[in-house]
Amino acid sequence: MNNKYVRYLWFVLVVCLTACGGQQYDVMPEEGLVKDYSSEPYTVGVGDVIKVEVWGNDKLSLQVPVRPDGKISMSLVGDVLAAGKTAEGLSQHITELLLNYIKNPQVTVIIANPSSADFQHRVRVTGAVRSPQSIPYRKGMTVMDIVLLAGGLNEFAKGDEAKLYRRVDGKVKVYSVNLDDILRSGRLETNYPLVPSDIVTIPERSF
Image (cartoon, rainbow, N blue to C red; front, side, top):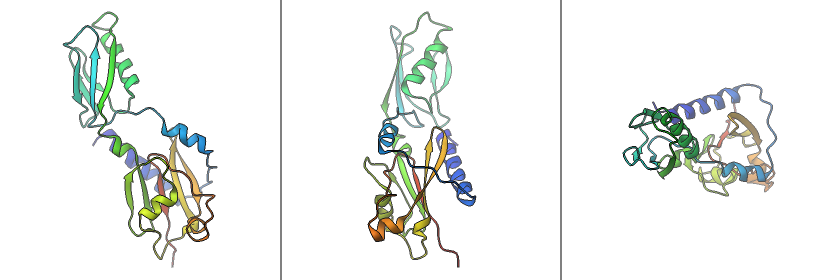
């Protein structure tokens, strides 16, 4: 099981556990923080094709896909964990490994084909909607957009108790969303802009 899938399962588990307990909701940051978040450096994922160039040493330079275990193989240093690192971070890591064999290695890493980007950038809506969705993130998407793409709320939804779950600095933050206000009254105070990996959940009424 690859590391990216494990991290996603962990995130979903935290979301579920948080939803079951008494949660103090976070205050949504200003829109500017969302823009900063959306420009975070890309991290290497399983299936990405990366190009490693070692200046002056063509035998060490290579272009390979990241294996399901998140690693690549290089001459001299063997297996190198690539998944979860930025291109710059992976370059520094390989440089440190090569120092044991080469004097002053100069390493450049380029992500030639970011095939895992679709998974990293997905946003999801679950719970009391007509068609739960996991879709690629698009800049400018809002809570209302993803709920409408899911066919809207079903007849059992508690739209005023919806929640937005977001990973921020390694922690899950929960924001209260009032979908009844958004969809029925045109009040958009909680129609928050989305960022990659956001999850919107809508609970059902208990009978």
